[in-house]
Amino acid sequence: MSSQKCVNLILIGPPGAGKGTVAPKLNEDYGVTHLSTGDMLRAVIQSGLPLGQKIKEVIDSGKLVNDELMGEMILAAIRDCKRGFLLDGFPRNEKQAEMLCNILSKEGLKLDTVIELCVPDELLVTRICGRLLHTSSGRTYHETFCPPKLPNKDDVTGEDLCRRSDDNEPALKKRLEVFHTQTAPLIEYYKKLKLHAMVDASCSPEEVYTQVRAILDQK
Ligand code: AP5
Image 1 (spheres, rainbow, N blue to C red):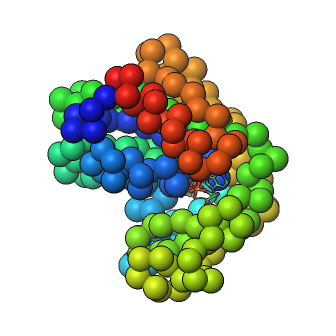
Image 2: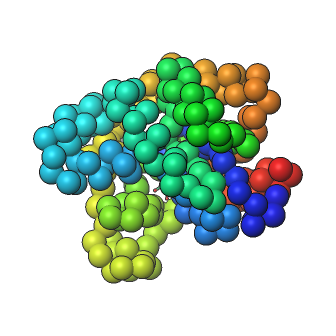
C-alpha cells in the first residue's frame, strides 16, 4: 500500500500487546488518525466531569465501560478521519463490532484490515507494569524496553511521565480475562470476513512494526 492511500484499520490485541506503540508510527507514515478509546476515556477522566469518576472506577477494576457510550465516542470521532482511521481498543466485544458495522455502513466507509497483535500473556505483566505514560499526548514508554531519553520525562515536551492507575497486576488479570472472553472471539469474526492478519508482537517494537507495514504494503 502506498503511504499516500487512505486506509481504515483495527489493531486488536491484549493489554500491553503494543497497540499504542505501533499506532503513532502508522499515523506518522500513513496519516491515519489514531482513535484510542482508552485515551478518549482518560481524557474524560482528566476533564474532571462527574462522568469521569464513574469511568475511572470501571477502568481501574479492569472491566469494560458501557457499550453505548463507546459507540457514541467512535461515531463522533470517525467522521473527522479524512485520511483513514486506526481503531485501538474498539471494538472490544460482539455488540461493539455490530455497532462499528452500522457506523461504517451509515458513514459509507469500509474496513481494510484487522491486525491482531499476538503476544503470550506471560510477557504482558512486565510490559504493563513497566509502562510510563505522557498523559496529554498518549505517548507511551517503558522503563526497560523503551526508556525516555531523560528519566521520567517525555521526549517531546520534557513534561513528567506517569503510570496508569490500571497498570497493576490485579487489574491486568481482570483486563486479560475480559480480553480472552469478550474481545478474542472477534478475531474469528474478522477471519470470516477475510479482514484478519496476524503479527507476532512478542518481538522488538521495530520488528513488530516491520510486520505491520508488510501487511499494509500488500493492500
Ligand atoms: P486501553 O487504554 O485501550 O488499554 P488496553 O487495551 O488494556 O491496552 P493497553 O493500552 O494497556 O496496551 P497497548 O497494546 O496499547 O500497549 P502499549 O503499546 O502501551 O483501555 C483501558 C481501559 O479502558 C479498558 O480496560 C476499559 O476499561 C476501557 N475501554 C477502552 N476501550 C473500551 C471499549 N471499546 N469498550 C469498553 N471499555 C473500554 O505497550 C505496553 C508497554 O509495553 C509500553 O510500556 C511499551 O513501551 C511496551 N512495549 C510495546 N511493544 C513492545 C515490544 N514489542 N517489546 C517490548 N516492549 C513493548
